[in-house]
Amino acid sequence: MKESQSTRFTGIIPARYASSRFPGKPLAIIGSLTMIERVYRQASLILDDTWVATDDERIRETVTAFGGRVVMTSSSHRSGTDRCAEAATKVTDGSRNTVIINIQGDEPFIRPEQIRTLMDCFSDREVMIATLIRKAEPDEDLFNPNQPKVIVRKNMDAICFSRSVIPYFRDSPADDWGRKHTYYKHIGLYGYRASTLREITLLPQSPLEKAESLEQMRWIENGYSVRCAVTPWESIGIDTPEDLARASRMLRDK
Image (cartoon, rainbow, N blue to C red; front, side, top):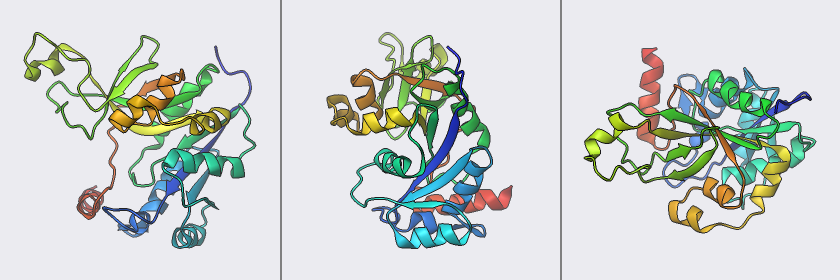
């Protein structure tokens, strides 16, 4: 069923200074801009409004200096989703027609087209949560546990996310699987209706979430549907200083 009332899309970029592998990552420089400013600029091209949610004064000062909107949140959050939920209570009215887009603060090359694809999911008023997936190439590595896979229903709602390869072809060698089936890899960009975001952050951790370390399995185990939309573009996350060096080279080579 199509959405009949106007939907407002608010982007929230969770940003922490502390990181075991890359402290201060949001303030790392790529080209002439900080990573957080690059993400903010890309998101602002398509969304109704965009906020950075942080618990760190250095990040707050940086965002304010480049003219961005920033909201301070608790330092005790376990996930970016939890930080988004707190921020949403402060910067939106929380109505059903408000959709929160959770944008990873370490993906400086996120495309507005990816965000638009996610936004379009909410033209269906039955959709409460949505995310992006990408078709794997036939010869692509499917066995990297750091790239979760997903299987979907015919209506594109997720059945399961896993770090393992799903489905498993019992009677075929693994090298042939990518040519026998269309595999999907998960892209970690989420949208939620504001009311649903509040609900899912109150849920206790679930068995499958603990096993896979994938919080979206908590939502599915509790009966929430997650609509998946296909994007042709891979996400490029920055998790280490080495990733930052590669991203800087990519920018120079453009």
